[in-house]
Length: 69
Image (cartoon, rainbow, N blue to C red; front, side, top):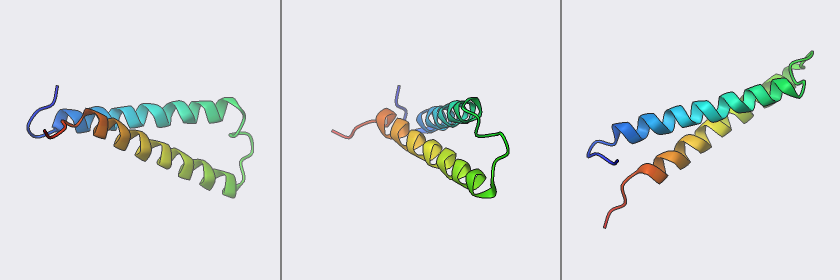
């Protein structure tokens, strides 16, 4: 699956991160975090979603990246 430039792996990792962050956002909405949120709660939710996106994107990319022999 790995190619020389790594564009496919990077794009797949980006989409995986977006999917994970989107599912986390839906979960947050499902448990009621969107009912009268305070500014601190909004900030915490955005930081959490950003951290999820970054962590999943990095993990998926490193998993898909070809290993040097």
